[in-house]
Image (cartoon, rainbow over all chains, first blue to last red; front, side):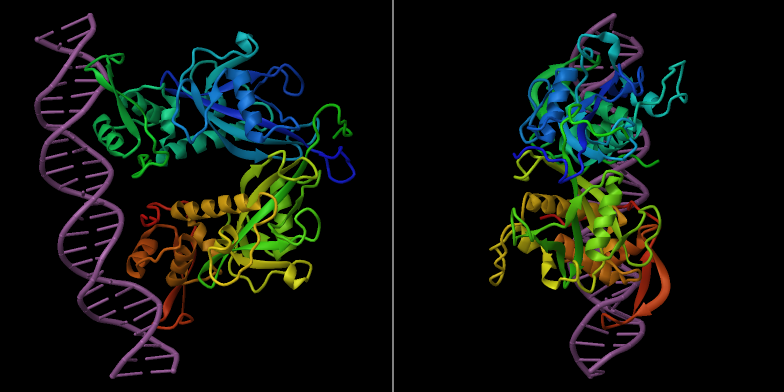
Length: 252
Length: 252
DNA sequence: ACAAAAGTGTTGCTTCTACACCCATGG
DNA sequence: CCATGGGTGTAGAAGCAACACTTTTGT
């Protein structure tokens, strides 16, 4: 690549920001980190960072994901194995005023991860946390004094877009399994749908629907009683990536 | 904004590229322009250009759209009026090797336009044209010697992503009306679906479905016989943006 | 009269929903 | 025994594909 010549084009900074979602304690949660620098010092923000000059956008997102969570993004074409997370591009945000310091274009990515022990951001425990998206998007509406200040920059908007993408995408794709461990029960998968959509689903119809959708789930042979009650069959994610028929989100 | 200091972040060029789709003569077509400069000199490419330092991404895309087609992008929240086109962000492409000259990140946008008289790129007639996406994406597969060389840069990939987005989005949104003039008949709308999906649809069931979907179409009162046969009712696009129930693309 | 495109009615099939009911475990 | 969650059966409602049939124009 020829050396940089600023006279030929306007120079931009390019970053990746990550919307990392998981389901914890029946709630959809996002990973947020505390900002150590100005602007928005001390406020919560989405994890992210600069794209390097020799690096693809998806590589930059995958690198940030490892740095922030230790998660490995796996190729969506291959079946999920180990602690792999789903990672896809979400949208790009480039309002000239979104960062007061300089002109930054941020390519946001969406990651879906199974429930993890705890976030680790440089070992600093209180500089990163999983927060219910409900609290992040509608602060003050919730329960006790979750004195949540709004997210830094335009990150509330980015998070909202990511949540909306996840909500609609689990309808017609097998992505909901990305929130589950490698082996899971139909009930666990149902609780994922309930948490992401914020609804309650009929367990009987859900079971029939999900096991009847070709390629969605494959029985792994084992059973578990970790949820109590009658032992449940364990499944792995199947090869299908798009669901036919789709899962239907109940009307309002 | 403070003056540019290249030591603080890697400098990128940021462009917008446009996938402008329309339906002409029963075929889905895209707007392409001939490149006058190296690299890929003389090859067809998607229209696009640099984002200015004081300009939002969507503004840059709208500006390029006007420059290339004379179309005005209208706010998707408002009802379509005049020669408005639908414009939305598609995806961002940032492979370090996608432009041999420098590191360029391109924010691709998707525009859907009604059939237009003719493209005008600086008044030069043979430097811009509507080409069937079939020919652009599968050169050589087609009919006569459409000696179509592949598109410049990674534009074939971008075009394919845009076409796929359009195909899936007319399923569950009212976007197909963006391909129609302000007033149109049910048959004209059906021919849009047939061209974009590459299928044939039952006119009777289509009519029932589309007129029965609340908010999709509102009768404008008039009729027309411009398609021959019995006069057809004229409609305008309704207020609904998401279709419930969705249109169903026939199985393969 | 005939062709062509617009609409309407009807029938059989698939799919969804709601809920009754049975199953297999832990305490 | 009983609470808990897992799983199957079934009946009514809703949605859809296929196609017969009627309507209204231009030629």
